Image (cartoon, rainbow, N blue to C red; front, side, top):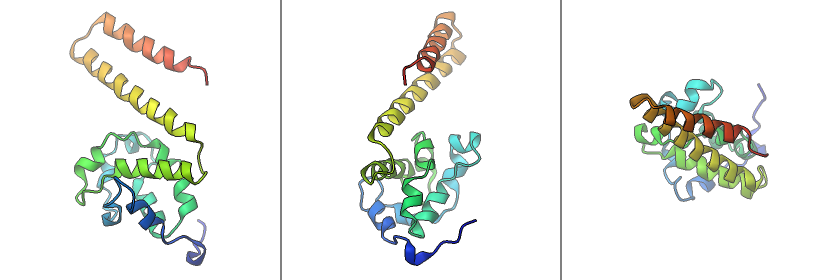
Length: 156
């Protein structure tokens, strides 16, 4: 574990985040863990913990926050938002962090577009799977297989 030297950090990052639309309640978070416990990404990725970003922001770790892979893993499904006792719209906070990451040169602009496309695809795929579970149908199954094949064979 690296030592955090506070005088080398940027204590205003938490204010910069909270000043953005969608993240106004960011500083109300007391890292209770409800977001992480509710998150479908955390269920499949043990390294995914939104509380880590909160703590890093509090300590002023701007580079660490904005270069973190965690901000790109969020599916923005809003389960965390629905369950947060402080009404922190953490899915929106992730969007703000993504924008800041691009603006400050930690990520290429194309990453936001690709992640948003992937989020839409994942939601569409999930809806199709649910439909297949409710009303099993060979046509629906073929549609799901075609969607996945198309995504896997996309040019990079």
